[in-house]
Length: 405
Ligand code: NAP
Ligand code: MG
Image 1 (cartoon, rainbow, N blue to C red):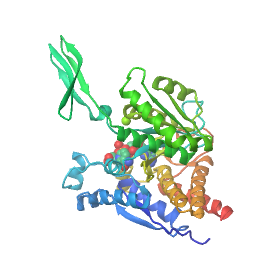
Image 2 (spheres, rainbow, N blue to C red):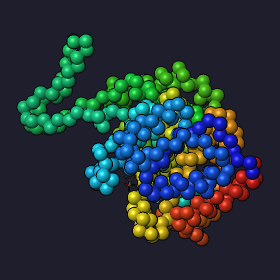
Image 3 (cartoon, rainbow, N blue to C red):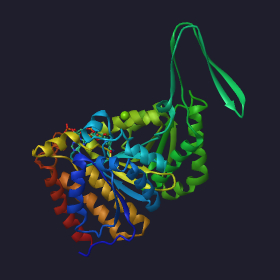
Image 4 (tube, rainbow, N blue to C red):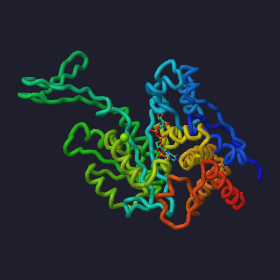
């Protein structure tokens, strides 16, 4: 087979620890033999982030804006212990946070569903993708432990003119908090969700508590509806997909009864809580993919899990590891597919589909890493090590590609 050409580069962001090792294995065994890989490489490994005072993270994010597609390896978000371990100049911010802020994007998390590992919720047949609005609300609040005999008012100053709203009069002590969001951020969130629904041809659900929060939550509902009607309704009708709004408690009940196969857009707090529930119910964090979508159509693909530090230390001690590379493989296939779609590079799209298929087939044929072995429900299984799994995928990828190329 002739290697597939890539005229436009992909932004490649290398990372840390066990996932950095997996990253290289995937490239060597699953990508380079088939593709004339064209990437603009950024090393987001902690050591190089420190050497560049984190400039490399900013450069990578700007490169995604330039080229439209990136793929990122998991990276360490340093804490005090990491500052010491790596002798860092400072405690850098989370690279994901930095990239998200520059792209103004929304993160979509979706499970990889395989036959033989069933979700805890028995009606779920297809993946449920969660989109979390990662801006504002309680995550940027101002809180106060209120003493007794206190009057709580909100004051807004607009062009020097004050608006004062009474909130509560405390006799005994209590608590209070102020929080905010912006039309701009809510609109970006809405557009990212509608775009991603069109991209993946799935229905979009959105829910708030607008009956109780008649201004705050209702504004989310209104902005979504306005943008949908004005910019997306026609396209949704054309594709036969639906935008569905309901109250958050009703949404939760419907999600549990549903068979999946849609995107669930959540306000910040709802998304924090629900994404962990949905991920756990689908089985394993190692089978969860993640894509950051900006409102103007830039995409960054990654695994939802971290750098798997515990396995990395075992690896450094010369012990065998059995780390699941599925989510990182899917990050690569997602990015290659998107690159292919943007450039009308059909061969690249087909390759990405074949890579997904080969990976899923590997598990469905009973070959898996340790984390999945406990969840496996279909009898015979072969538990392999980290590299063993990738080699098993490579064998099947060869077969898939022979059939289609
Ligand atoms: P983690 O790397 O996701 O790993 C937590 C545990 O989950 C592992 O010890 C392992 O359990 C299991 N696990 C996760 N991914 C797995 C995989 N692919 N295959 C098999 N098992 C897997 O989370 P963490 O240990 O809390 O964080 C480690 C580092 O990652 C931290 O420095 C954090 O800052 C960073 N992080 C980065 C990202 C990102 O870049 N997107 C996200 C989260 C965390 P067992 O040990 O029981 O096998
Ligand atoms: Mg959480």
